[in-house]
Length: 274
Image (cartoon, rainbow, N blue to C red; front, side, top):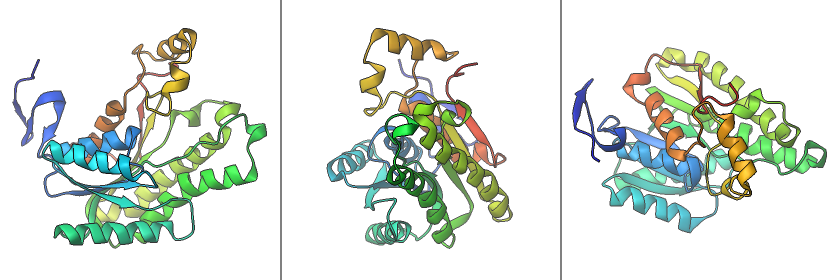
């Protein structure tokens, strides 16, 4: 059933609550946008009118499909390939981003930066190697830090930065210790960056998902009926999150409606473990 078209705060709202035109004229960069939560964020921002740079590390086919899906629905997007967690990653990503804008004849600069890309070492913390730990911090913490640091001249005044954190920072789990540590560092980065960039009118926030059913998580979420039931019952809203749930939260923070929110971590867990 289609929702009626409503007029609110100058934006036109249609199906699925998408704020058509809310981000017209804006340019966004979403890291790790070829699948999962990042892909949903890229599609939502594009649906709201933004030109979206779809960053990815290696899967050309997945990134191409994401861009094609955006364009098929009337949106604007282009791919940017750059491996994160290696020397010079941020600089290479920005070079690709700038080149993509030039190719499209778009104005240089970025209004919305979403640091979504992340990795999680597998297994109990006793099995986490030094290399695992180094890579997790390189991708989850150092890459966002360097992207902002090297992109300050590109980030427009009045823009926004959204970091994808995790509810794992609030749960003591040996299985996610290294991952939780990186996201805890990202939360500190968010608050401190908000203070540093506030004079430019740039908002900086984080969004913390809980259990979200992505292609990576589906295997263990659907591994047994017992596991699935436990995850569902852990949330107050009694369901597992979908990538679109997180994308909608990011879109709110990136919109004019989120203009007075900064230095905040938005819980997007459906009331996990309340």
